[in-house]
Length: 362
Ligand code: NAD
Ligand code: IPM
Ligand code: MN
Image 1 (cartoon, helix red, strand yellow):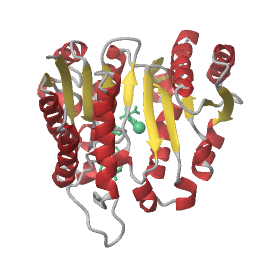
Image 2: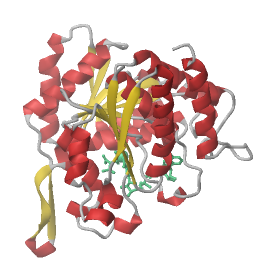
Image 3: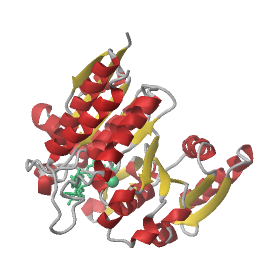
């Protein structure tokens, strides 16, 4: 019997609402497999700041590092927006990413046949969209030093710093992912202006001969933002630096119908992976029982695949989400005007019961 350790970091806002449902899903999967999994919970973000004065307590880091995988809800909210950068909830999220060394953030974007009308874009643009954004996660503008007010507060500096090694390791991941897919890699940068982007482009071109089966193209980020909406079908694997990847992945969420459907996996060279929905703490809907838990369920599927090597079970979870969506169930974020929708717990229970049915034979 395998012992697996998973740490859950619920965080703030709707984070605890969606991770609660994800926890039920994990418990049911462990039971169906006849395995005993240890599911620990720890504090991060505003909840951690309120309890301990730090958005990322040492105990949280230690627990995460001792796990096979970490599942995070979301952090942040207006309550903590006045705090200085170092104690904001978001610093807890950046801190755990850095501490776990998860430099490659995989954000799959695939349209759901049943949800084409949930997007404001024309359905004919959307069918067949299937891409992965590989976002560099532990470098760039988010982490470069100095990052501070200068000139007595009259000026400010954020630093966009990358080493060749940091670029190489994430670009290699992207090439390998492309090799397992449609073998096309789009590197997004701003090489017409930024020196960091010129090094990025150089590294992609230097590595390309090692992956001769992968077709490589370079696109400037402003044009990429347009093409994501205009011709989203052309993309297979997109690799880009931290900030560009953050912005483009929220934009790409619109293709799928809702950011409430987008999962992510953050992985390093070894150690536990970090799995989180792409969405935030959604203060506008917190406590109403209407948050879409499916991005968290799909993040659980990525966790099962990448960290627990339970590929088949991961696929069952994804298929269960698909079948519940195809059966017409919607959460509020996916429902059209006048269309009925289910709350967080109701849709969670539909998907979990579908998963149970699929795992009965295990
Ligand atoms: P957000 O993703 O929280 O919300 C954007 C919009 O999407 C809102 O209207 C929200 O109601 C909706 N939404 C998001 N997730 C949803 C879900 N699961 N179901 C239904 N609707 C959903 O982004 P924001 O409003 O820009 O940020 C709010 C806070 O979240 C900020 O403090 C920000 O720093 C934080 N944030 C955290 C993460 C994270 O922890 N990974 C990611 C993004 C933003
Ligand atoms: C995300 C979020 C975070 C990021 C914030 C909350 C720090 O927007 O995970 O996409 O910018 O990485
Ligand atoms: Mn973001």
